[in-house]
Length: 219
Image (cartoon, rainbow, N blue to C red; front, side, top):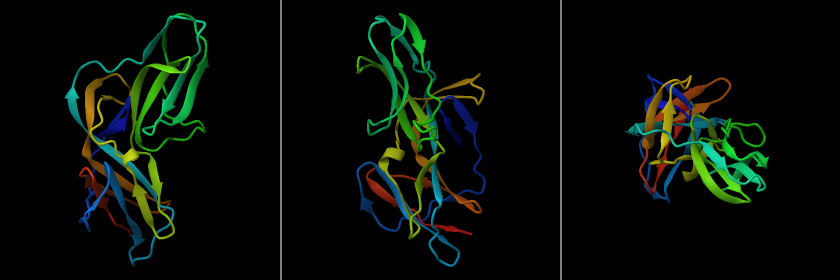
């Protein structure tokens, strides 16, 4: 199974991962959604469990990855480079100012405005000229925390963190020396439930517009 951030590609063999638990009931939603409860071996809810999502991918093509370059033609206009989530909210401003004419490239370091790892999802880096987007490229973040269990051990992963079908996801080797092509996020994802002392992984297959109920027991 291939997982990884854009520009950081890791091959993970998920030996010993559990398959998804039985679908308890069919509840509809818009897009994709996972919810459930985390308990210990005697049924007590476990509070404060970090829930992460790892995506899996299928190869679509070996065309060149989308360019991250932007050509400045007017040095008097303000260029802003911002990162937006799937809800079109700006989570980071990478640059804002004027630049000399020519090609410029801004790579996102996959941190939000506070220096934290953003939740697993797809993000778009926009080049704005006087506030209007002139070019953009996408970044897929996989394996980061998307939810925390509450007082009753419950968690929810919304559609924003389950971008099933998203394309293109350019994938590279860890050192970026090898390009593996443009991929698409598939409907099988790996959920990781972790505390300071315990961890468990579950592989789930998702269906569009159906809530996936996944209850987990931490040993």
